[in-house]
Structures are given as structure tokens and as C-alpha cells.
Length: 441
Image (cartoon, rainbow, N blue to C red):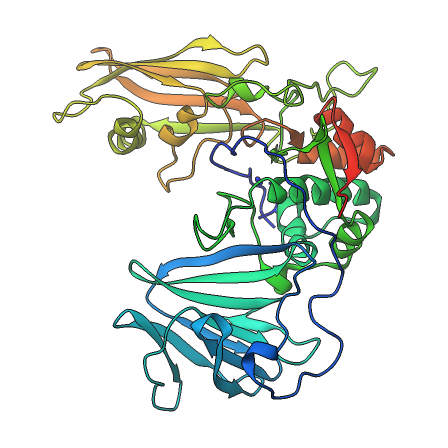
């Protein structure tokens, strides 16, 4: 997916190409995460967890980690065998470490002996309304499932869709948005909800639906929530984007740099009629754009000979056939072709050991900074200098925008909200032909 966090940071949601949209018919959403009453100590199978008539999402907070520390802000219980029996009853703030052991799991208190090895998954569940589970000190709504995985355990937050969005929207659109930008935050909530519904998978396929990182949508749990984003999520409850009656996958990015991109310009897949290039120019202006307040509306990245060689040596072989002897001397880097929106379609790299061609979004993952940060966008031009022997000694890339460029431009949405647009018109602009609609159950 965004701005701070492709949100707190000016970043692009550096996602992998999203999966194609599919028809999903979600159930009705209810606003509360837990029942209002205090739950008494009864047999585990009768204790309530997440109810059946609301859409539950499963978010992987960590995968393959050696261990995880769990607790809650109020009384809580730890169950084994996927909630079929109670393993322990913890007080608020009482921390336990869960780790794998001989094909099962065991829990150990910081200052005590471990439990025996028990069947997974382990479920961590608060038993008082208003309390949160904690994972390594961070608060989350819903409950936590811990399952064995290669390298250790995978930690999954299971919670209602609307509560999930409360921890996504601020990190994707920025945690410091203001009331006059509320329409952009509401548009973000609808786009993120649509994305989430189209990425639900069967539990038979894997134990989680999405990751909590930029590979899906950045999710920070209850600690990331803000009052404005909460109001935006509540004000758009159950609202999604549809095309021909189906919920769409709604990609978004930080800054388009002047125009968004069709999906086929970035990813090697066919276009969707609602993912086409859209101009962000402010009507009546010569050179003003809704997204030009973005700190990455224009940018420059410079490579010296050493950093350029380091990037190509390390990353080019992931996208081109590089021999075991390496790339040789870098002699040329040129834009070979552009897409209709002006982004680089093909970048040609010439070396003493061959010629290599990079296409579309792959370019960003090769021309990384010395610290490994991918290139902001493919909306750029190049300027290189060579020594007398023809080797490139420096490369300057001057670009526009931040992110893949497909779908909603988040800084553009902010600019449009400041200009008075509502969230529905923002979404219709960036996803033309779609309908803003509520899920039917």
C-alpha cells in the first residue's frame, strides 16, 4: 500500500503486485470487538471468542520467529488445541513466552517454570471487555493465535474487519491528518477495506489472510489508532468499491507525481478498466497538481561508481541473466522505452560483459540505495557521466512520485480533500467506473 508508514513516514506502499480481484460476499460487520459483559471462568468451549456473524480477518504479525511474548491489559486466558482447553489464566500485565517444542508449543512465565508441551494452536484471549491482548508489548484487538512454523512460530491476530482497519488507515494515510483532510482518510478506509476483502483466503490454504507489512497493508494494532481514522472507519462501515457488482482490489500509493498509471504499465498483467492513468493536475492551472505538497513529488537520487556497482552486483541477477563472473564494467544506463503515462517501461544497462534489460517495477528493486531502499518510482530520467575509458563514474536519477502509481494517489486524495472533495468523488476519480457501495451482509 502509503504516506506515513505508502503512513509517519513518507513512503510508498511498496507492495508486490496485488492479486486479481475476486467476488467476495462478506457478512454484516458489527462494531464491537468483544461482548459487553465480563466473562466468568467456564469451560473453554463455551467461552466466547470472535462471533460467527461478523467478518474476521487473520493478520500475520510475525512469521518464523523463535518465540513470542504475550500478555493482556486485563485478565486473559491462554488456550491450547485451538481453544478447546484452558492452559492458564493470566492477570493483566502478566507476561508469558510461547515457543515451539517437539512439534507442539509450550508457555513459560518470565519468573517461572514452563508448562508442558501442548497441541497447537495456542490462543490468547482477553476475558474482560475493553482490554487488549499484547504481543511483544504492543496492544491488539481481538485475539492472538500462535502456531508452529519453520524457524519457530507464526503469530496471527484474529479480529473483526472494522477493528483491523482502525490499525491500518492511520499508518497508510498518515497519523497526523487534520479534519479538513478527513475525506482522504475516509477514501483510504474504503480502499483498504476493499483490498482486505479481496485478499481473504481459505484457512486450508494458510493460517492467515494478510501480512502486517507493506507486502499487504501496514497494520499496527491498537497502538496505531487515531481519533480521526476511527471516525473515518466508522463513517464508512461496510462501504467498499465494486465494479460490475464485485468488490475490487483497490491498490494505492503515496504520490503519483502528476499522473497515475495503468496497472499494465507497472505489473505484468492485463489492465482492469478501473485501473487506468488519471491526471492529478489541478483544473485551470499550468503546473499545479493535487499531490504536489508531497515531499516526494519531485526527488533526486545520485550514485557514485561504487554505490552503483554495489546495487547492480547485488540485485541485477534477481531480474536478469548475469553470469557467475559478474556484470563487468558498467558503461551505459539509458531509458529505452516509456509507458503512456511517462514512466520507464524498459531500462537498458550496458556493461563490458553484456547488455541487460529491466522492465517496469523491477527497475525499482534493482536501483536501490546503499541502505537497500528501493527507487521511489519509475517516473524518472537518467543522467550519467563516464571516464575516458567509457565506464560510468556517476548516475543521477531525477524523478517524480513515490510508489507504483496505480490506483489512488494518497497525496492527491489529501489535496482533493483540502479543496473540498468528498470521499466518494475522490474514489470515483482514481478508480473510474467503480461504484461506492455497502456490502450486503
